[in-house]
Length: 153
Length: 260
Image (cartoon, rainbow over the protein chains, first blue to last red):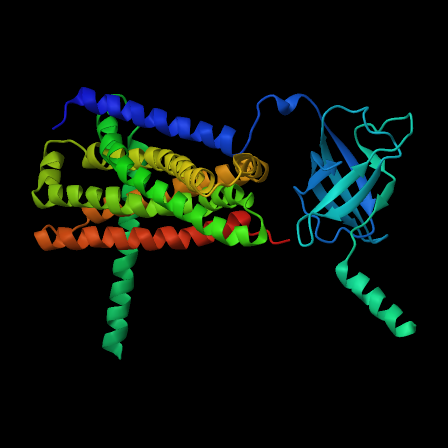
C-alpha cells in the first residue's frame, strides 16, 4: 500500500493537470477571449438566394471577420431568405447604405457574407435591415446561362 | 421448436434481470456517495483510476496527435492547404478521437482493473463479510469507483486532447515546417467552445458512466472462481469498447446530426 499522503498529493496534481488542460483547450485551442463581451449587435439582410450559407458562417469586411450568421429563415410569401447576423463591436460604425454580398472562400470553400461600407452619414442601428444585398452566385445557374447563350449565338 | 422458444425466453428473462439488477445497483450506488467520511475512499479510487491511467493516456495522446498531423500534412500539402492541419487536428480530436480513444484506453486500463478487483473481493467473500458486518458494499466499494470514473474521464480526455494537439504541433510545425501562425489561428477560428469542446466533454462523461457501470457490475456479478474472474474481465473490456463505439455514433448523430 502506498502511503495516503502520496496518494493525496498525486490526486491533487492529477486534478490540477486536468483542469489546466481544460483551460488550455478553452484559451489556446478554441480561442475564447474573456474580454470580447462588451458589444455585439444584430443586423438583418434579405437575400434572394443564400445557397450554401449556414448558421455560424462568417460575416467579414475587407477579409476580416467581424461577425457571424446567427439565424437563417425563409419568407415563403416572397421567396426570400432573411439572415440574422451578429456583429462584434458597437453600433454606429456601418452606414445605412452598407451593402451585403454572399461570396465563396476560394473556388470550393465555405460561403460567407461580405459587407461593403457605404458613404451615408446615417449609421445602422441594432436590428436594422441592410437594403443593398446581392445573393449567392449559384454555379448551376451560371452554367445554365452560359449554355443557353452559347446555343443562342 | 418449443424447447428453442423456451430457452430463448429464459435467456431474454435472464438478460432483463441482469439489466435490472445492474440499474438498481447503479442508482443506489450513485445515490450513496455524497456523505462525509467517504472522501478518503474516493481519493484512493481517483488515484487508481485516474492517476495510474495517466501514463498510457499521455503516451497514446502524443502518438495519435503526431500521426494525425503527419497524415493531414502530407495530404493537405498537395493542395497547398498546410494551414488547415491545426484546424483538422483539433476538430478531429475534440469531437471524436479524444473521447473515444480515451474511453477505449480507460476501459482497458481502469475498467478491467475494477472488474478484477471487485471479482476477487467477491470470490474471497470479502463482500459477504462486509454485509455481515453491516457495512454496505455498494457504498464502500461501488460508489467511490463510479464517482471516481465520472470525475476522471473528462479530465483524462482533456489531458489527452492537449497532449495530442501539442504532439501534432511538434510534427507539423517543428518537424515538417508548417507555419505556426496558421496552425494556431486556423484552429482558434474553427473550434467553438460549446460546439466542439463542450459536446466532446459530454461524450466523455457518458462514456465514463457506461464504462464504470459495466466494469463494476461485471465484477459484482462475477462467478466466484478464477475462471469466472477472467471471463468477467474480458467481458468488461469487450462490452465497454463496443458500447463506447456504438454510443459515440449515436451521440454524434444526436448532437451534430442537424444536416440542414
